[in-house]
Image 1 (cartoon, rainbow, N blue to C red):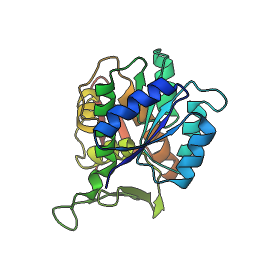
Image 2: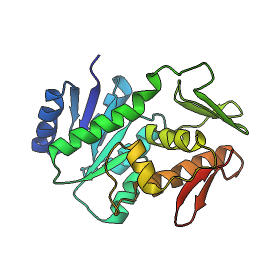
Image 3: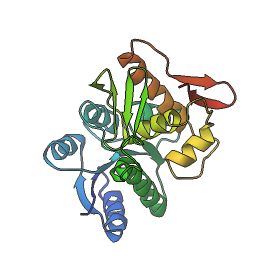
Length: 231
């Protein structure tokens, strides 16, 4: 069954360009020209990924992303004409999984889409044995098969990228992963030194875990090296 992608952009030319490339790759596409319409589609349709422009009249992309993240972990690729680091960090902190600057190479956008969809669906692969997909660390349980994390049985809402990072670190207790290694393993893309994506996602993941684990700090920073989870 084809994956369904929602394109949210008030620039019809850009939306049509993205649609052409995605349809050529076999994806089904829905388009919305504003944030309100986008939220209506998300509520009524099964959407596998959202390509979301930041600068839109009325309800902007940041607000739309925040609203979606209240109830859903659907992968979100944010687009913006703003190329400042703070703009990118803001987009990622609101819940976006990836961020691209306009103008962009449509082939790169398609590659990012494929990467995000792989991250969101890889849990469908059957585990090698009944226990291989379950990791328990104190009150935290991580289930790769169902793509879920729970603390004392209570679900922790994680995006596919956040879950991927958590499972990576938790499945190698004590091992330190650098930002470059995390990025290339999770995003399946080449790491750029200027990228803040790993730092921002780690920060967001920590906040969610510590909130559910009564302030317990699970993910440790090894300064100048990377991140780890102790067993």
